[in-house]
Image 1 (cartoon, rainbow, N blue to C red):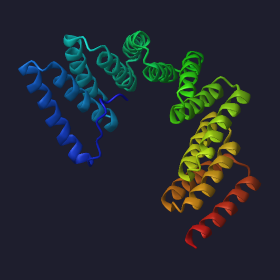
Image 2 (image 1 turned 90 degrees about the horizontal axis):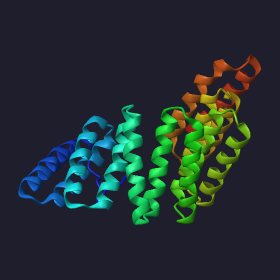
Image 3 (image 1 turned 45 degrees about the vertical axis):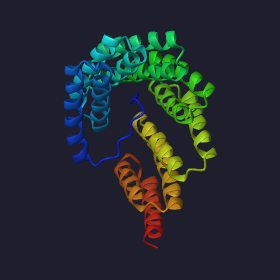
Image 4 (image 1 turned 180 degrees about the vertical axis):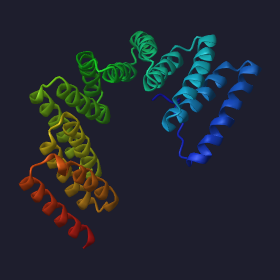
Amino acid sequence: MHNDNNEFEESPGEEVENVDETILEGEKFEESGDFLGAAQRFNQAALILLENGDYEKAVDCCLRALKNYEKIGDEKGIADTSYNLCIAFSNIGRHENAISYCNRALQIYEKLEEEEGLADAYYGLAVVYLNMQKFEDAINFLRKAVRIYQKLNIVDGTVSAYLDLGSSYLALNNVQNAEKYFKKALDIIQEREDILNVADTLVTIAEAWEEYGKHGKAVDYYFKAIDKYLEANDTELIEDVVERIKDLIPEFGRERAKKIRKMLAEYQSKIKS
């Protein structure tokens, strides 16, 4: 999400209060004729709302930001806000609106030669098409996004795109390509030597296989994730993964279920020790 380089680290209660204050500041700037200040405040409020999942209110703030950016002809601001509108509209199921605003962002990023913004907009369109279950369209835009992320060495964007490519290919029953992209994502994360990130990625891959109905593969990846969480000494996240595995046990035959329970018992004894 594009945010005018402002960071927010307040607690949820403080964030709600800050949203209201920020909107009021935006209104005051707007009344005084400081349209850039107004646009920035409304955009800041929108980003907090997006982060908190209040998408309807985020749409309203984005539209108010957009109006002010348009008044001063700030193309970068218009593009960034249009991208944020894409994300907000997509999350409330208004996919056509999301596509329209993302295409507007794309056109401006292309004109400004803003490559990272262009990649994000491609990714935004991919997410909309994923939500619409138009997986071939999603793959097309994910590939465009990942090419730019790789060129700019944006690792997180590359990994996320690979994971979504894997899930998209699974949805199209292309298991070979799904495995290829999951492996690509995992290889990159493992190079960073961030144990928790590796574990989280393994869980994401497990979830994809679970949704696809390959419960054996899902359990295998969940156990690999537990190994990493143990290595990172994060017992809280281990417990969550253990519960996910327990929920899958009824999907297996008697012998496999017995083996899984035995493995879970062994892991739980390791956690206690």
